[in-house]
Length: 305
Image 1 (cartoon, rainbow, N blue to C red):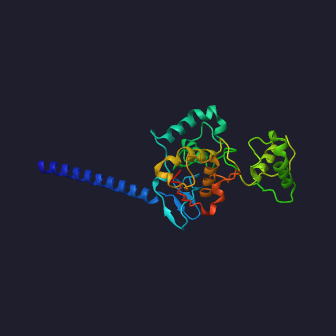
Image 2 (image 1 turned 135 degrees about the vertical axis):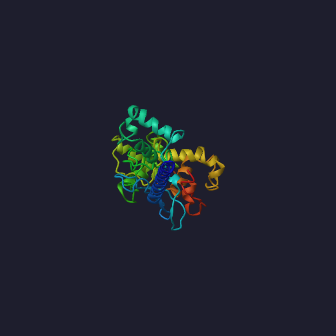
Image 3 (image 1 turned 45 degrees about the horizontal axis):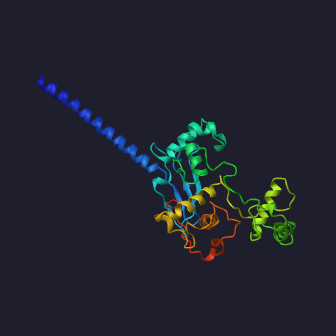
């Protein structure tokens, strides 16, 4: 009987060992399967485009996105590290911003979150902060319905711009404003002087036309001095107030830029290096005048803000 009892115990022990090994094998298979199928962002550097396929293998509405980030000139495709998509976690500034937007901001300032409701997912709010506030948050890995910034006026568009052609009615009106109007009625041209550029005057006539207070024949010029609330304004302000003073990134700025340079000079720098972030300013700048010989070191925007 003792032998029988020992045999039963040994049989039970063997069964438990086999079950344990089976569980370990299943776990190893599952981990390997996830690692194999985990998608990674892809970058084509020459065209400055990024493709994030994180979270998009099967799920509908997966986060397959492209976004501008000009970097080096050579043709190169490479897998990016995991930090190029990241779901915010407690303790991070992005998590605090996203939580505030989802719990409070959407109820008190709904105009800041077009296309979102208090039923939208955390990832939707994080993606909104990513697209509408450059580098405020990383692109989430989780699936999101937000694929671009939906805030009207957040980004200036050159879609309908047109610089006045010589001989056109707009050209005549701008020339009159520069040669006569600014001297006879300077109050009509606040912030302009007799030294302001042709495009600055054209922009002023376009603005008067837009407000229906004047009858002019000018399109918006193909330049734009960025305004508060625009993404470019945020970026330019950061570069002027902080970036130029941070040793780790200050060497990316051309020698002509210092912390005493005008706001428009920083906007011109961002336009030349990252045209998707900022339009060319209408205000004349040394950076634009020497664009071909500015010695720009345009950093990859994942390493430089």
